[in-house]
Image 1 (cartoon, helix red, strand yellow):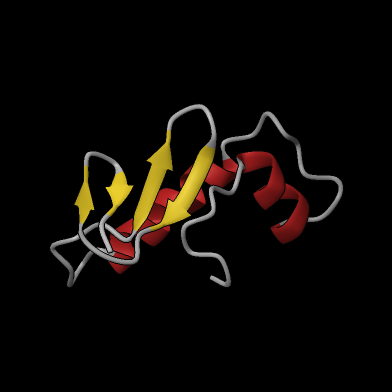
Image 2 (cartoon, one colour):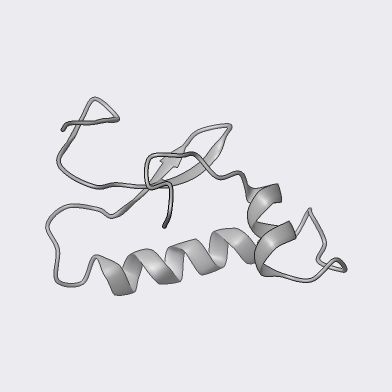
Length: 71
């Protein structure tokens, strides 16, 4: 939340949100991101979490054009 345009990798999320015993090959992050998207997007026409393929996830702070935040 402090760096909304920063891309956070699945590994970083596992290291900072779950304990050291979390399996890096698990679907935990994807399942939780899907759940968050469902809850956050319920009242919004604009998605709030973007998947950056091969890199991770980032928060969207405004309208998105071609995968880049428009400010």
